[in-house]
Image (cartoon, rainbow, N blue to C red; front, side, top):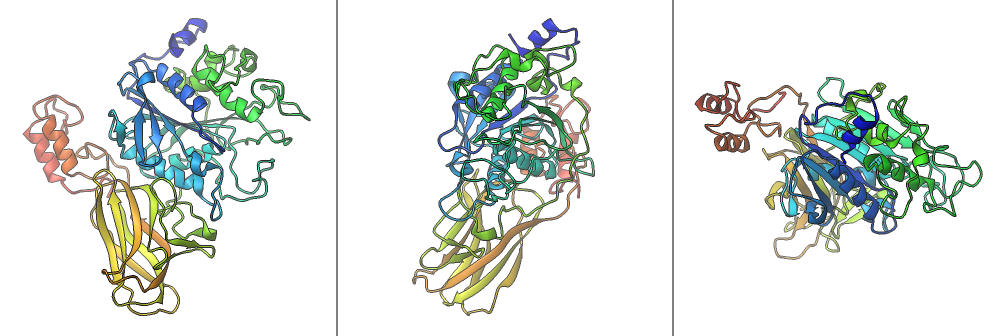
Length: 526
């Protein structure tokens, strides 16, 4: 039985229409993990999909390609409801080289690129899993940071995130305590936030946080998130003041019980989270909507699929997201490999502990992780220092569009003379389609062998300000009116398709075509 049906049956609340205004995308991710993570996340994703009114599909992220893998055994092919499993286990628990600064942020870059320019290993799905879809991001532990950072990037791009749910958020930012080997380390994780643009363009509409904090044992503490709907579960889950681990229970860590608690509100009949953690009905007796002491009026209830979005508690003030460099860790802070490893990044180029990238015969290239290139990309910036020169060697900076596999050269210059200190370069970005890309810096030896050595720092892509005004000719909402929009209009020509009916006269015809051609090449909000 669907969630909304059960809730309506046991309460006097008048339920909303059974038809959602737009399709939904729910993304779920794990926290710090020492091994492959999948069972509880996939079980929750399936439960989310089962709440869909018109069916739905579940996909798992493939870190090697950045594409989504269709899971046919728990899907029906419909994309009205999409549940996504985002796996970042490889870097979630640390790396073998370099400080662990910024890995959650780099993972969020990869996630946003996979949402906004979606590709599939098998099966098919929407080309954009964020735009014009009700978007719900769910993250547990350190994964709450990934989801918050992804929400920040989406809001900066003019996309509203309907809901951000954090489950016992545990940023590793130098202020946490525990016994996982990370207690005194600072991995530069940021605290989760509810993001809201001051211009009213986009925001995280609703943010809810479920956490417990007791300060004892090897059970990672969660934390309160300012300005959102917080539910403290320290007493609800049976946490003790002295011994906080349930060593005789099915779920040893209360930290794990938090995502099991939420799972019980997604699947009202679940007795387990799918990974051996029992879900107890007693957890739900003191939380939830007034007058209701069951699973049906809390947690997932507040989501668009849960049927209780109209009853969401009020939010505090949102936090203004500050635009940042398109490339994560452009300055190689403290020698971190974040942004330059995993998710399509890496290579033999050496990231120096002092905070720069060195290319030479021992390692002639390095690639940045997948990221979303916005339509308002303005210039490519970098600092370079030539330590050993060769007139035959050239530094090349290129960007590769993942959907087409086509590289575009952004900059090339000869490494012909040794310099003193770092020198800046700024090159205007060519006109490129918005989408998922990687960026590579390499030495081209012209076939004569590499004899030079160059250090790079502060490699970045800058953007210019862009607003969020409605652009009816930008049919695919990628920020520019171009051939993609023309193709959508031609495909709908002669129909009443609302998306392509620019003048809203009930028919897609030459008037709409003329309007689109008149705005061809224009950017939204500029």
